[in-house]
Structure formats: C-alpha cells, structure tokens
Length: 305
Image (cartoon, rainbow, N blue to C red; front, side, top):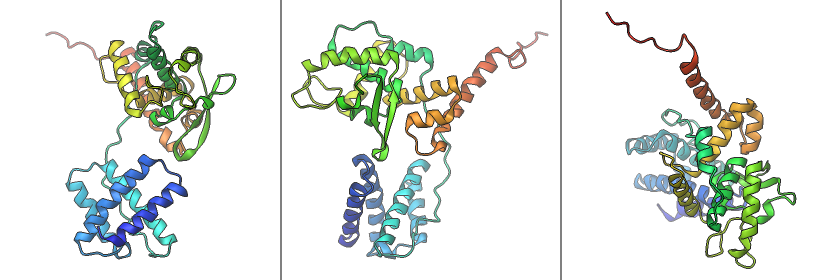
C-alpha cells in the first residue's frame, strides 16, 4: 500500500471514530478489509483511490472468493469499500463509487443458534452459590438473557446503567444508540445478590457493573470463558457462547408473543429485516412440534409382508 492511499485510510478512520462514532472493533474490520484492497491495487500499479474502477473491485472480490473468503465476509468487504468511497466523494477526491454496482456471491443464510427453554433453565437455574464470583456469573448471564444483550453491551455496562428502582437497564448498543430494557424477575434477584457483593471486589472509582477478581472491568474473553465453564458445570452437552443467550431471548420472546416489532425494539435492531431471522427459528420450532404431534405428519412404520 502506498503512502497516499494510506493517508486517506487514516483520515477515513478518523471520520469513522469522530463523526460516525463506530466501535473500535468495527473500525478494525473496515481497516483490515481496505488495507487488503489497497495492497491489491498497489500491486496493479494504481497510485490512488480515485484510480480504482468497478472492474478492479470485481476482480478483487473474485480473488478474495477464490482465496476462500465466505460470502458474508465478502459482503462486509464490499460494505467497507462503499462506505470509504462515500466518504471520498464527500471529500472531493472522486466522483464515483466503484463498489456501488458490485455484488458478492450469494451465500446461504445461517440461522442463529439458540438454546431451547429447557436448556436455558438448565444453564441459569443454578442453586444458590456461595462463591461470590459464581454469584456474579449468574447475574451476568441472567441479565444477558433477560435483556437480550450483546456481549459488548454486557461488558460495557456500568452501575449507572441500572435504574434506581433496579427494574430497567439503560443499554448502549451499536452506533452508541441507547435503549431501555426491562429486567426480568430472576435477573433482578440475581443482580441484587451481586450488587451486595460487588464492593468487595471493585476498585475505588471503577464504574463497571461486573468486575473481575482484580477489581477491574471484565474483558470480553473472560465473559466467554466463564459462560463456557458454567455450561460445562451445568451439564449442557454443547458449547455455549454469549450471543446464544441473545438469540435465545429473541426466539423465546417471539415464540410466546409473536410481536416482531417489540422484539426488534428490545434487541435494538435498526431494521426489521435483521429481526426477521428469528421468525425462521420460530417456524423451525413449530415444524418440529407439527412433525411430532400431527397424526398425518408422522411416518407410519413400514408394513411387514
């Protein structure tokens, strides 16, 4: 990548950070995708972003596809490219967006993996723990399931996020968008237990709601590991990851209420289409019930001759 293209990437990253206020991890994804494109273009002899054409982008996407990049990752790469060029057009460097008409190869949409209601109860209905850190873990994952939190949202919670009545949670989601989520009864009890123990661990001035043994905010990786250990301890036979609790929250709520708009609001989705994936999970559940219960759906045993 030449210095001129690199300089524009620095300015674009500053734009994402200060104007768009995107999370650091999201900016890292943009940066990685665009640095790969810049290196590819430099190898072709292109000296600036304004020299890149739609044909170059199509060949780049095809090259990445041949390298084994999945369709979903290619779609994200194209989104990064289009966003960069919208910025470059605004800044007057170019007049066209070469990524606008390029499409990524289609990929099958994977359904999010969720726990069923019994598995969720098996995971979270842990007998009263005497270990304060287990009390913390139960509170974390009850809250994650009760409020449909993303991992990053859970990790970033501060004590100020809990309302004075301790019945609602103020959540900062993607793009720094705020939403208020009700805290369910079980999560409320678990949270109250942890809040009585938290002062033993939290360092002076530490705002984090959930802290590690050393008194500072828990990392994303630490939360993942604690959930895996809890699932193993509770006898679940598959690997459980944090986002699975958010998926479970959405699918169970939709299964019970059928209110897609409400689920969208509670999840903090900007677009209803993002939430609609859970209707497929709900249909999958209904189909299983139908196959198991409907007399015309069940296969008859083969008649013996």
